[in-house]
Structures are given as C-alpha cells and as structure tokens.
Image 1 (tube, helix red, strand yellow):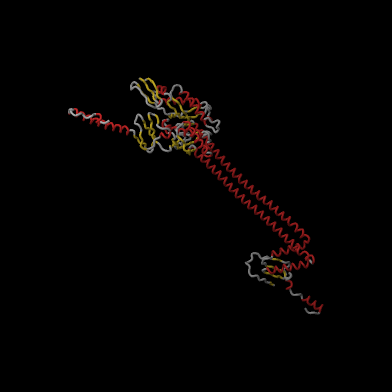
Image 2 (cartoon, each protein chain N blue to C red):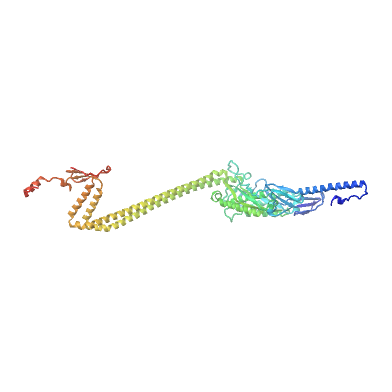
Amino acid sequence: MNGQDAIPPLPPGEDAGSQALADALRSSFFIVKIIMVVLVLAFLGSGIFTVGPQQRAIVLRLGRPVGEGPRALLNPGFHWAFPSPIDEIVKIPFTALQTAESSVGGVPPPPPMDRLDPNTTSYALTADTNIIHVMAAMRYRITDPVTFYLEFTNAAGFVTNALNNALLYAASQFPVDDILTRNPTAFREAVTARVHELIEAEHLGITLEPPLGVQVSPPLYLADKFNAVVTAGVERDKARQQAESYATTKLAGARGAAATRLFVAESGRSRLVSMVKAEEKKFTDVRTEYERDPNFYQRVRQMTVLEQVYKTVQETILEPHIGPRELRLNLSREPSAPSTNSITP
Amino acid sequence: MAVVTFFGKIVRQKTEPGLGLRWPWPIETVYKLDQRIQNFESKGKFEEIRLGDQNIILLEVYVGWRIDDPKQFFPKFLNGSIAVAEDRLQELVRNAKNEVAGKHVLSDFISTDEKQMKFPQVEAEILKRVQQDVAQGYGLEVKFLQIKKIGLPESVTRNVFDRMSSERQFYISQIESSGEEAATKIKSKADSDAAKLLSDADAQAYEIRGHGEEQMMHSLQILQQNTNLANLNMQIGALTEMLKDRTTLILDQSTAPLNLLQPLPPQKFEATNAAGGRNP
C-alpha cells in the first residue's frame, strides 16, 4: 500500500485547504514509511554480532541452547541472532586445546623446612606414609561445549580439581620409591586413569588429550637424602659393572691360558710321539747292520757324525794334552761369516 | 530457573527455559536462580580429623552441587543466595567428613593393598551423608564430592621427615653393602671360574701327555730290544743337534780322526824295519 492508494487525489472542485491537507498527509505517510523501514533495518541489524578469533559463541533462544553438542558452537566471524530478549549470545573464550594444571601438591618455595604447615603447603601422602610433592598438567578438548559452559559455573575448576584428586588418589596407592624412581610410569598411568574416571563421572563434556604430564619430587628438606640414595645406586651399579668387567677380563685370560696349556700339551705330545717314532724307524732300519758288528758300526757312525760336525764347526782348537775331552759351545756368536774351518795346532 | 513471588510470597517456580507471564512489579517479582552446577570448595582453615585408629589427618574436599528445588532453596537461603547456601553446605560437609572419616583408619586412605584401600569408598560415604542432609528441605542437590587435598598435622610431618630420613640412610647402607656384596660375588665367581678353567686345562693337558706317552710306549718297547743301539742313535742325534750350528771345538789331538795327523812314533818305525827289513 502506498500513500497515493491510501489518500486518493481530491476530485476536481474540492477547495485548496483540502488539497493542502491531502498533500501534508501524503508527506507524513512517506516519512513514516521511511522511519518504519529504518526501524526494521535497525531491528534486523541489531541481531548481527561477531565472534572473535579466540572465541566461540552459543545462542540461547528463550534460554534454551540452539543446537546440540559441538554444533551449538558458533565459530569466529559474523553471525546473526534475534535481538534480546528472544536470543541471548553467550561468548566463551576458546582454544582448540585447553590446559589444566594441578593446584595442590606442588613444591613449596625455599627454604627447605623440617616440617610442613598444611595450611600453607600441600603435598601428597604415599602408600608407605611418606610425603611427596606431585604436580600434573593435562590438555583437554571441549567436546560438549553446551555442557561445559552451561551446565557448570566453573567447569575448568572441576577439571583442575579432578587432576588434584587423581594425584592424591594415585599417590596413596604407590610407595614413594615407586613414584620417584622404580615405577613412575605406573604412577602416571594411575593418575591418568583416575582423571578419566572423574571426568566421565562428573560429565564435564571434555576429552582428555594424552599424554598427561606428571612431575614428582621429594620434600626439599630431604632432597639431599634422596639424591644420596640415587648416588648410592649409581655407585652400586658402577661397582657391579667394574666387577663384571673384571670377571670378563679374568675369564678371557683364563680361557686363553687354558687354550695355551692345551696347545702346549698337544704339541708336546705330538713332538714326543713323532720323535720316538723317528727313533723307532731309525732303530729298525739300522738294527741288522748294527748287530752284525756293533763296534764297527759305532765307529762308522762316530766318524760320520764327526765329519758332519767338522763341516759346520766354526773353529777347532787342538790341544796336545787337555786330558779328558772338553767341548765348548760358543754362545752369543757374531753374525755368520763365510765358513772357513781351520785347524790350529 | 526462577521463582515468582506475589507480594513476597512464592506462588510458582519455573525450572525450564522459555517464555512466561507475570503481573508487573510490585505485584509479582521474578527471582532468577542459577541452575548450573556450582563448584564448592572448603573455605577457611584446613581442619584436622581424628581417625578411628587415633591418627589425625586433614581433608579438604570439593563439591559439585546445584539448586534442585527453587521453592525450597529460595526461602531457605536468603532469597536464593548461593553464598549463604555454601556457608551451610560447608557445615554439612564438615560434619560428614568428621563422621565418616572417624569410622576409618589411615590405611583406608593410603595403602599399597588394593583391598584395604578405601579412598573412593570414603568419598562415596561422605557424599552420601551430605546428600542425606541436604535432602531435608534444602532445595539443593549434591552431584558429586571428591577429596581435593590431604595432609598431616605440622608436628607429624616433622616425625615423618625424621622417619623418611632414617629410611633413606638405611637404603643408602643397604645399597652400598649390596653393591659391594654383588661385586665381590662376581669377582669371586670369576676367580673361581678362571681357576677351574685352568685346572681343567691342566687336567686335559696331563691327559694329552699321558696319551702321548701311551703312544710312545710301543716304540720304546722296540727300542728296548737293543738298548745299546738305541742309546747310540739317540746320542748321535743329540750330538748332531747340539753341534749343528757354528761351534768352537777344543779337542785333544788324540781324538779320531785328528790323531791321524800325529807323526808316527820313531821306535815303532825302527821296530818295523827290524822286523821286516823294509822301508815304509
């Protein structure tokens, strides 16, 4: 409908006043029309909102979330919703991965104290009633933002407390040495399992992103003592390794010596047998000849040997009367020179 | 959720989101209440609890609770004040902690024995006790309760530290002695094994030599058939071996065949002439 339809032109013959009133009404309706268009545009425009790069948004229509699960989250950019009070925009800080850190059990600041005030310090009790400091950090993904942001006033606080509880619960099942040195992996797994259990039980709408970071340390006051145990362990291992090294060397030497002894024995046996066999053969070969005339045979062999000896002897000195024969072996001789046997009277 | 009052008196409540109608103020007033789960943690001093075995521990819990019945909650806690409700909740939790923990012993909280460990059971018992209390017209619901912090009295921590220190010292001594023991055992075993190896080798060597002598016996029996010849052969062999290199010999001139170099005795020559009348 426009102004001309609403206020038809006066038929000819109407007075000028009526004509002026009609013109005024036409102008007024036009202005009202403009205003209405502007108002409609303003109404629609007021529903436009932006979500920042580190934000997500949830639209509550008459108090009820629009969409379920991850689809309820509006990503960064321009969006439109009905103006209040129909829709309400809840903007939430958001990163892909959230981080939570434990708030109890950490190491108190120095100096080391020989006692701990429970109101100012916190720690965990181990299964063997020792005191230990434990800290943990974990990353999690918000898989159900409607639950996480609209079901809890402080869901992140519950996540932190779940982590706190998990540390205490796990520590209460392990001896201190298991947690610190013997089986830290099992301790970390126990913490992780407990966190999972609590997150599911409390329906926080998040999913834990492994791995979970756990840091453990003895009380500052006893740090030197714990370090001394570690050092003693290292020294023990070192002594054991040295002993193993000694054993390896000793056994290797013994094996070598044993092998040498066997080799010597075997070669001695072989040499002895060969020598005697050779003597046997020589004996057998000449026996007949010897028994025919032993003196002659002995004389012939003696002369044969002397001939060989004289050929190789370096020097022969004849003495007229030296009594019984004396044989001198010339030891440490000079290098061999061309053989020139000489007979000196 | 919300409650609507008609001149101050609660006339209705609304627990689901949506549109609603009311008379204008001051006839009717709408009080909106947060129906989300609240995170409540114990406030104030960390309180000591005496356990059933007379040990003393300190427990702090966190509680997840929410308004369950606005009509009950609103008048009970100063027009629905969360802070006032949590003050009351703190008292309820404190009573429940003392009552439940007093029935347990320290090993129910910390133990390596899974069967004896009752950490979750203690939490469940405290939660149940608190839930029973708040069911008495508080208009709130406790969803869960967990232990957040656990501790010992300050004086006890000193004793614990002393004991831990003694334990560490004991472990150090134990480790050192075990290390020495292990090293000594390893070395002794190595010495023993080495000695055994050598003695075994000696035994085998002795056996080998014995075997060689056995093999030699047959030859010796043959040699024994003429010991003079055998001795001669062996002496010649030894002499040849001994003098095979360049050697200086100092010999008597009468040694054969050098004795051939000596002049014949004259009397022997004369005797020969006299006997035969012939010149040599």
